[in-house]
Length: 625
Image (cartoon, rainbow, N blue to C red; front, side, top):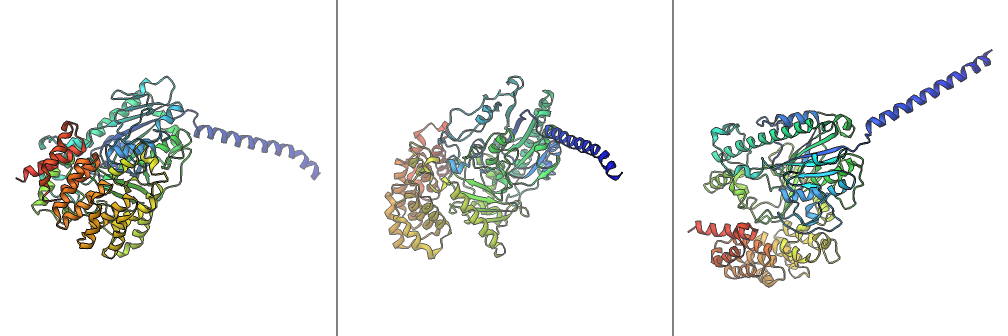
């Protein structure tokens, strides 16, 4: 009886098991259908210019940004998003290629250095995958390239012109918050934000102009918020919101002095908010309305867009996809860079992890706030300079007009304004060493173009591209990197090592040897004799360094003759370098006629950087009469 019973129930159990297996399969299948839509998502970028996370959703109680706050409440707010460069053209070069501008040779501001054919603008890949790609309207990619992947790129470009049932990628740029918004003074009584209620950063002096510019800027951020709200409303009215991933970010930080152009938190940390409609929420890293702490930077945007579309990411891209099919593990660091900013030369590099920021200044003999024509159009900058010259600034506020230290280390989470340098604090010695090594590794890995001065680099890469030159057999990367690090870290005991670099076969090694001697302020007669031998060096930027050394040592006539020769024979950037050096020579006016010749070579209305630099000098000398 027992065996008969077992035989009777066995078929029923088998049927039940088959039913359960079928139901499990169907549930899995349906879930897969829900989580993997067949249609590619539309993607919209809302890109604002020159603004840090001065938004209510980021905790700024002075800001008036209801539309962006609402977007954050319905999407994902990235708390550690960074522009790799703190100014538009190199930042946008990084965005469009997925490669570091310092690696491509597109770091110096508004340069036109070509890039290899294999480095494509990422919309080209989206277009090949079936996307209709539009850009309204700013490009500013800091390079020369004919095909850019856009179906439309103009002030009128719109996704509305796409063929029916075609996915689109659209970029909408908003310029209302650009730095230029401070160039025209708005009467105080017309401002929405009260200057008296502005909470100034500790590095800004409390002047009426500074308070006014801050309040006026907050007004412009409010205007930006309104414009973004209007765009999102149009997207909704077009019936596209439920099929479109919306990504908002600023193209770098800004905009008052010591933010834009500087690789501090204020220049590189940006707001980034991503809204995923219901059908694409499976792509979101966290629940809507919450924050995402992963470190992301602009070099990651191109691979991430390809990943969202399921497109294989090219090997040359240097970023990490943070969404989609090819999402990568969280990176430990973001790599940041600063090069020439308009007519002012500089070189700084940085790495930032989840807490600390490490900065290395390769030209510490220059102040951070070199006078730059465009920056000084803001009334706040003139007031800061005036307060400094009048002795009305404290040590923190004064430091940016004075020569810098080589290394800076900040606890950016505790000290968001980054004014407390921990580099010499023994408590943070391990952090300093770790981040110093991380920066060295990243610069070597990416073949950092900044290790060769710009004028010399253009000459070396002539007929090719900087990217290819840096990967060729003629580039002595390790020798140059070692020389650069010795130049910035050397103490008086290392003078012999620096002197030994002056007869190296590579002109950039010789350049860094001279730069190290300049930094130390050495005036030893034997060393000066060695340095003087480079007054006719093949690298004109090295000659300029030599001129600065000799000038500071009292050999002013010899120094000015060297500078004059560079002004006569140099390419544009070599001339700019020489003009920058002349600005720090108190008897530079003796070369006034040579500087006038530079100014008159080109149309002053074209605002070429050698023209700008010479104009600054001529105006300075005229004012000193």
